[in-house]
Length: 92
Image (cartoon, rainbow, N blue to C red; front, side, top):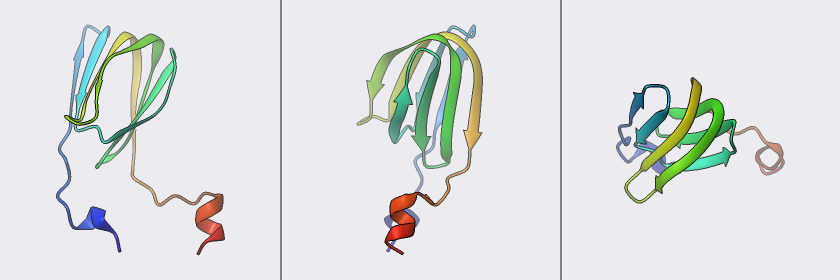
């Protein structure tokens, strides 16, 4: 059973200030991150943030908020996809 289908989606927002700071709400989880890229997960898909000298200044997954400072170059949204990784194929 999929619990995601039963609960309402958490809305999210993005606020960019002068390409030097960005604030997100509605973030469910954080994937990888370094000075060039940050991966965030929302109910509406994955967000890939690209830039340089990226620094996470606030991370609060209880309130679903993330603030990042640095040189912001790109924000890329991707759709939520069913994972087709090794273990999902193995346990079908």
